[in-house]
Length: 73
Image (cartoon, rainbow, N blue to C red):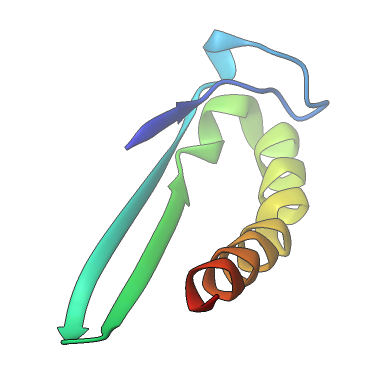
């Protein structure tokens, strides 16, 4: 798990800390499922939390796709 310390304006702010947890689950000898959960947006307040949730909603899937392409070679 890592601490995501950015506010809704993407400025460093430890008080707006949310959490990102990434799990790698073996599903077979050559298959791994990656699960990512980004949580605790409410620490940014209602408006800030909703903005950050929307901002990262498409960002994480794109990053995971990049990761999958890199791993696949």
